[in-house]
Structure formats: structure tokens, C-alpha cells
Image 1 (cartoon, helix red, strand yellow):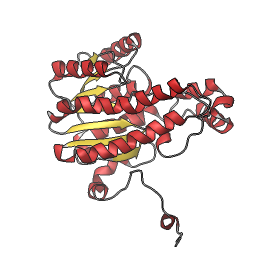
Image 2 (cartoon, helix red, strand yellow; image 1 turned 90 degrees about the vertical axis):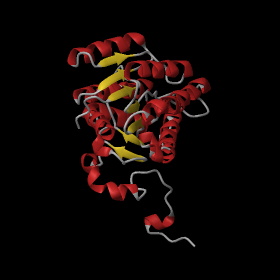
Image 3 (tube, one colour; image 1 turned 135 degrees about the vertical axis):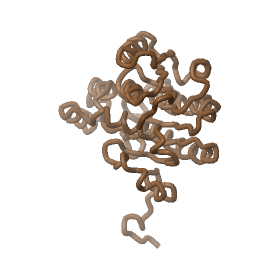
Length: 285
């Protein structure tokens, strides 16, 4: 998956998964622009990545929920790279924890603005740069909230389901413009989001979610580098033509997806769809 000469932007890349995604692209030879809201954290991340891959790491502070910030990030990318091969929309927050009738409404809305609207805004403003590439790639980070209910984490769950449907829709819009759009479920990671659940306690997130988080903390969680490597795969030429899919880093055979490219392109495998009785062996008439 050599990506020498490719230009990549990774949002939310000052720590955790975003940082590892940036590192994984750099290790394959790409040039990477990282962004995050907190300038000090971003500078530290850039310095560490720069020490490992001198001369190929740029950084620009940006809040993806704010249009002026994203426009500045896109303008900086244009000045530095002239074209963009891969956009990784990783920036996200977990949002407030608790019953929907008790959580702070401004915090709930802010989570939607970052996770959903921030993703849409980045895709919207970077499209002209992605069209300049031979084949542009958009990679959107989703998660468990996209495919199952997450009581007491409703803003997170709703926004993650929404970005998957947005990604599927965008993939169809961009099919003739030679830009692939895919979503990644990285697995249950031991990052700051897990710590937030533990800090909130069972009173806010519920006993089941809290105990699950404790087990995850003890087990070590999913390997963070696997999700990062999946992003690199989807950003490489090996995944050309694979688009509109939600792929689980930990469970799906993504390293060999090109073997099933035709089946993927002609089916709803790895997509969000409604389950009807016949899918479960029932016939209700």
C-alpha cells in the first residue's frame, strides 16, 4: 500500500485514533496535514510525527464544526498540496451522557454539530481539491453507535448512524466524479472516549454500558493500529472502486476486499439496511 506522493488530511488527529491514522499514512510514504481544535495538543502531535517522518507533516488548528476554520484548513491544503488524495473525517466527540430528557440540550446539539455537520462540512469544502486527484478518497469514521442502540449516549449514536447514511449517499453522488467514499468502524478502542464513559459512572451511562466499559478497559480493547491500517487500505489504489461501504476493522476481511470487488459493487453488503421478517425466516402476511 505504498502511498508515496499522496496528500492526506486527517481531522481530529492530535491524539488517539486520528493520531495513529496520520502515522499509518506517513509510514506508507504519504504527506499528511493533521488538524485538531486544541493548538497545543496539535503541536505536540506534529512534533512527534515529524521526528518519525521528517518533512512530511503539516498541522493546522481547526474546529470542524466551524465553517471559517474548515475553509482555512482547505485553503492551507490548497496552498501546500494543490490537490488532495485522501480526506479522513475522524474528528468527533461523545457528547453528553444520560437520559435524553435530562442531558444538557446545548451539549447534545454541539455533539451533532461536530460529529455530523463537521463531517459534512469537511466533505463539502474539500471536494474541489479531491477532484484534482486521479482518484479522490473520503474516509469517514463511524462506530458502534451506527449499528445498534446506545442508551444514554443518544447524541453519539444518532450522529454516527447519520454519518454512515450520509457517506452512502455521498458515494452515489460522487461515483461519476471518481471519488470513493467509505466508512470505518474501528472497534471498541481504549481511548479518551472510553475514559469519559468510566468517569461518567453507571448513574449516567447505565449499569450495562459502564460494566462493558470496565471489561474493555481490562482487556485492552481493539488494537488501534488495525483501524488505522484499514484507513490506509481504503486510501490506497488497492481499494479503487470500493465505495459506499461501512467496514469493521476488527471483524471484516478488509485486507482482501479487492477479491470481492464485483460482489461489493453490485450488492448491499456492508451497508445499513432495514430488516424485514423474511430476513429472519418469518413471513408476516
